[in-house]
Length: 466
Ligand code: SF4
Image 1 (cartoon, helix red, strand yellow):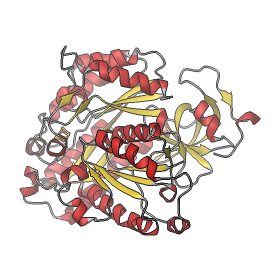
Image 2 (cartoon, protein in one colour):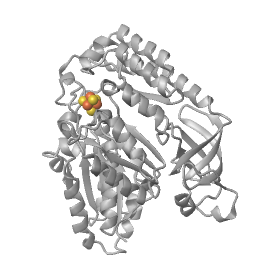
Image 3 (cartoon, rainbow, N blue to C red):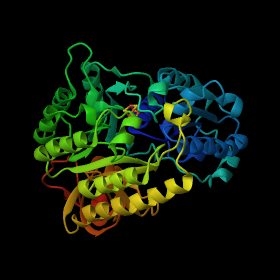
Image 4 (cartoon, rainbow, N blue to C red):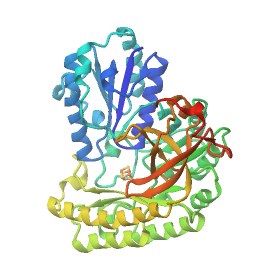
């Protein structure tokens, strides 16, 4: 069978798009493979949010050149935000690409995959391809046999908020909310396809408004949560400006929601928040978190933080450290500011890079302590976590994610791929905590999240290679 390999960089919007590409490819007769050397088509779904993401994507294209040289029939395709941003120059800069598809070209990409399918016989991979196996490099996510268990459903494209550091409104356009009926149909299809966890995604997902009726995001959550067959529901990424008491109350009252709320604060200083054009003050952010805590006291709160934004002083940075000490985030994604071409902040005086590096290390020390403490608090408990696949570092162990987004790793104990696809919810006793997550012992596997009687992994029927 013809193989397609999909690497995804960046946010869940891109993961949702990769899922769409995988579905279109599968219905055109491709098999989704997890090794680029066994693929006829290699897709890089790229991100431009940070300079580093852009460099990694171009680096990956250079690595795949070796594969293309070994087998010129291989189709190498780039899509996503970088393709949108550099569409006029990318094929000149990387002439061996077979296609560049922007963020609004996914349907055209699906059509191209269908048209190419006949070019590949079912056994035409050249021997020399296998010499290229050690390609190195790593995507944020590779589509694999367990990807369908998590479906990312776009509820909205683009963003109209124009934070001064962000490229998204320029490459994905202004808010474009999807009709509720389309979202519901896509979620139902994902559930029918085996999805156990649905993530509703949008750059500012909680600003969602149904175009025809004005239904808001809290109503959308309630509507999707009520669909038969849904195990768990979550959403990314929210904006503090659009967090309302009505949404807080929905979080506390919809039992299908995974107990994790990601609310990017970006920094703890009002002058910097103003220059970022974030549209809230620190006091407003904290009062919204207080309302959230009233309704969902046991949930994990996670965030994004940027250090060394242009003009950030030591006092501004100290305010961010103080905020983190008060909030005790269960997880935070931390970045040194990197200028994006075409955004207002890119024209402003930068903070020296060594200052940015030192601030990032100081911030990580504070945040990591809280993250580790959050994981420490789970030791000895048994959690139900959705399988992700073999651990990247040790394929004899399985990685899974809890509802509050903690990575847990345990020895596979003979659990095979077929059994895991059937029973993907793992009951894991947590034995040791780290900053990255927890080590544990896999005790059982269940079909559904609320299955009261999981099968013990010692059952011989479960034992086969992953
Ligand atoms: S809210 Fe700001 S950071 Fe988020 S996508 Fe919109 S412009 Fe970018």
